[in-house]
Length: 328
Image: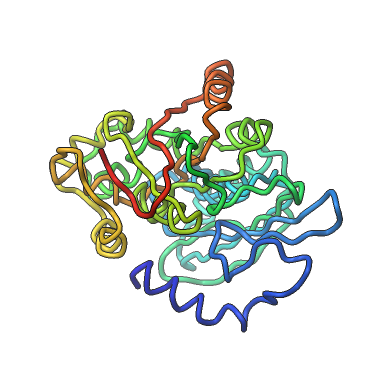
């Protein structure tokens, strides 16, 4: 199902699935953000999310680690820290036990790295392996980051390079180089905990993570939820090794075309880009970086802190009054 259609269906049933007027529900289904947020008291809110998918890489351990990092990314995008996780598993009965063990170990190690506790889960028989996590985090109720937090005058930053989706698709086709796959796996398995910590320390309120809708899809969501215009600078975008070459070979996953169809009406292209590079910006990412709106007076401090910690970060655009996206 196309992402825009799914979003409309979920919105139409928001009254059935969530208590919109509940005083403790800070973020719920009706606002379509990265995770749900429920206030426990004046100092603590619970952040809840769930995510799972079929293998994106061949190595079982890496698959588990990437799936876990991807699931926890939504907690970080909301300004939370990971506390508790449950496995969600769908495995074919004939899948070797040692393979299942490696998948689960990859996920468990990532939860441990995040400082959380993996406390069980649920498994069903399925024709194709599926793995992920239901994750609980905590955050201060007054420091929640959302897609609606961008303001005119902000700078837009991205905390990971792009391209994981097309590299994993090329790998499935047997056309990706080993070094490119390794770089993509390392990028996807990298937690966004430190990046989120920097943003929280600077009081950032506008944030999302780049996953299934690609850069342009998630930027479009931020623009729509915040009621702003986003100007992206194509020259500032960074890509994983090999991503451009696989785009030239047109090795895009099916989600690329669906994202383009769903979001292109709100996007204008001032930049002179090859068609394959435009498609790359619609391509789904797995465990991508945080996309954050940083007030201009805090931009230099945020970038210097990322540099001090040796973390990737690029200023890729600006927030303006208006609506939609302009790629310049």
